[in-house]
Length: 183
Image (cartoon, rainbow, N blue to C red; front, side):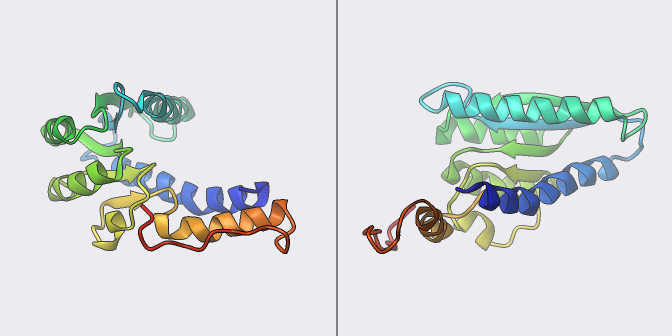
């Protein structure tokens, strides 16, 4: 993706992430309370590298928020939950997080896990900030507590074509046609 395209995506999704975070703060019953958020992702298994990136990003956001003192007398606390991108483990993680004081979950990385967790989080009022799932079904069901911060599978062909045409002469390249089975 070009620098221009990346900048457009960042401008588009950064406010949503910030809004979710501020909503969690405002939803606290008092300003002097801690705000609990969780990162749910693959801390083990074949996708552990992605989980580490998610964990590090969430930790950096929490550190920056706490350092900014934007929310006086309030600490944002991060917990990390390992779903290993495994459906059985993800059910346990989702249920555990709903039994705690967590107000926002950054996760899950895998689409199928995010889709199944979204209903459970919505029932308990937990905001789900989804950093990796690309399956359109995650947001098509209209759950208001789900915020997607990455592109959908059905958008990737168009983005790839735009990016490819920026890099090469489109008249000399054969680009594959979109497939309805993608994702």
